[in-house]
Image 1 (tube, rainbow, N blue to C red):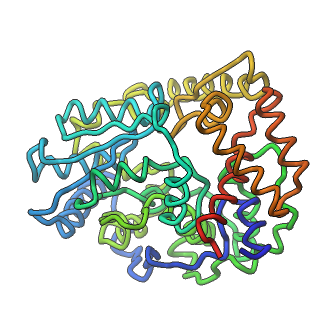
Image 2 (cartoon, rainbow, N blue to C red):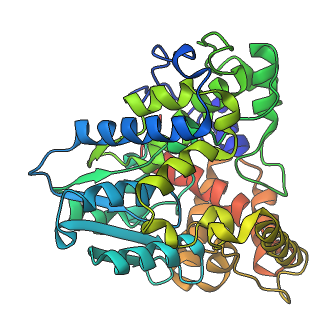
Image 3 (cartoon, helix red, strand yellow):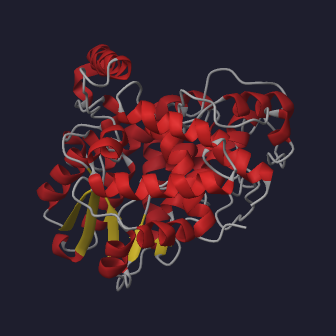
Length: 410
């Protein structure tokens, strides 16, 4: 692992030099003309038909299907489609995370309602091992901090012979990165991206400035009138270098119905105003599967859509205020944010004796490598354990860097 790769992990949480494009987006079929003058009701009807056709093209009658479920839109679209083609008992589903978070609780509510063959992975109860974490690093191509994934060995045990239908990177397709205004050239788009943080850190771990990373950003872009430079850069960096490798763990069979399908071409081709906030996609999904959208959504802060934007904003404000209080006074204002997708690493790194032991030992090994200042590592660990700050992100970056080394990252 060279210095640029190390600095990249410490800055972004992934290796910016990564160039495995097995899941590259094909933008060549974007065509704005057919949809330029369509109104919203027309686009909902057209999009619903294209989405169902895209799913049907991938579906095979005899395959054993797994649908990971959460509190989001994508998993219930895939589940709704499967329920039209299979008995519920023949559909395997799983949810991972911890109780009292939206993704975990809503995902389990939906599968109970649908009566699928469901498995729950409560990460608070999972006994992590060093062997499993090292193997997970290999399966994610060493491209992500750890603990943002279901238990690898249990997945192999349960789903080795099945096909996992996943909504990975659907958000990028349907408008998660769509904005009202954009930068005008590739360099500005790259600079803007490099200033963002997927993971918010309180302590600077890296020493390189952004100019050192810039030359490794993928500049292979298309006409920005078809898709903005901002979206193209974010997709090629965040979606392909970080998100896809850690969701699509090696060794499993996957189907990706939102990537390089007619529905992807449609969503990139509609006027941008319908992609902002994933508006059109949500209306298509609710139109197709109204029963499944009687349940709350994680992106609406655990509320049902009929509450309206004003109430949702109040709930968002409440969650953010509580989270801010917890950040300022972690010892006295404990708060498990319901928006956490996995589990509360802040508390897990303090109170889970098994995890604490594994992480502490790996941090000592990292210190011996002299890749990161040993005093900084000690300071971060001390301040976190003593509730001076919540520094689980920093700890996880450092820990994962050591695990990637042990897993053979070269």
